[in-house]
Amino acid sequence: MSDARFEDGGEQPLALRAETAEDLGVIAALVQDAVLPASEIVWEAKARRLAFLINRFRWEDKPAAEAEKRPYERVQSLLVISDVRRVSSMGIDRADKDLVLSVLDLGFVAGEDGAGRIELTLAGDGAIAAEVECLSVDLRDVTRPYRAVSGQAPRHPD
Image (cartoon, rainbow, N blue to C red; front, side, top):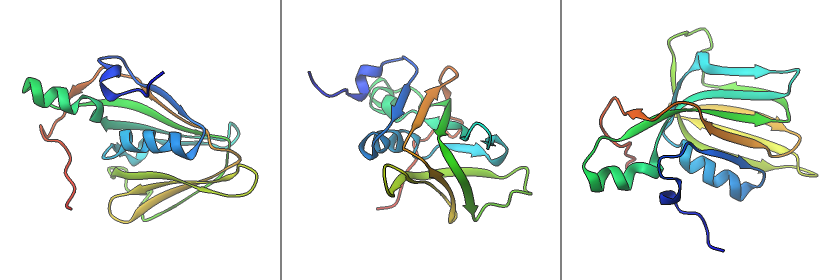
């Protein structure tokens, strides 16, 4: 058996679950540079679920788009954190209904007995933290890919 590669996904929608910090690293790479309106964050306290409707850059398609000289793509995806005990945030103006957030990273800080904190780092010094009973994060594409509005792949200074 061999490891999966980006190319193995082809045009299929992604449906991934992270239950370990290593798994979460894969999802973190796929959601880097995703954008979302702050209004697309839903905290369901009774269900113990924190959900984000994100517009993620299709990193898995970037090599093919460049080789075929076609536009880069984004896709709407649900990023869902389960078994959440508590949510906190900083650097986000919840009163700003037009606020658009950009995801920089997604990480896990382990606690005792499998519990811990999932941290979503945002551009502009924003962050969202979810205290979780265990690590359980799902990423699922929910629309067809669409042309990236900017026409550019996200870039990061070295």
